Length: 42
Image 1: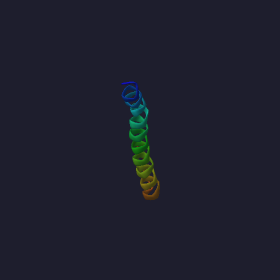
Image 2: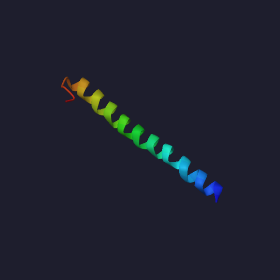
Image 3: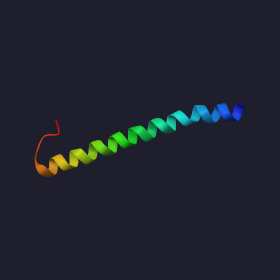
Image 4: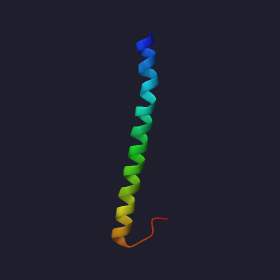
């Protein structure tokens, strides 16, 4: 029971990190493309 609860609690920071990393990677990819094309990202 304790091991299951521990894994459940520790799973959330890993999921948040994965989502944040994917959002950041997509942002920097779009930013690089915008700079290469000479346009604003906004």
